[in-house]
Amino acid sequence: MIDATDYAALLSLGAGRFDAAVCTMAIMDIASLEPLVSALAQLLRRPGRFVFSVVHRCFNSGRVSLLAEETADQSGRLVT
Image (cartoon, rainbow, N blue to C red):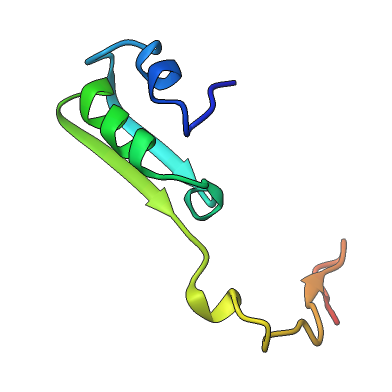
């Protein structure tokens, strides 16, 4: 596994090697984004794509709490 804050380690993956990069629900937990963003400019072929997802800010608050969860049981009935 590569440390996303280690620019040299990221570049060891190969300059111009990738058409796209995806970061799902992790970018908000990376201490420093500068090494990753700088390395992506080198790692991606032109025109490269960087796709990422993050938690919406309404879910990243001390004021939010889970009250109930709904799911379907094996018969398809909704269970709270």
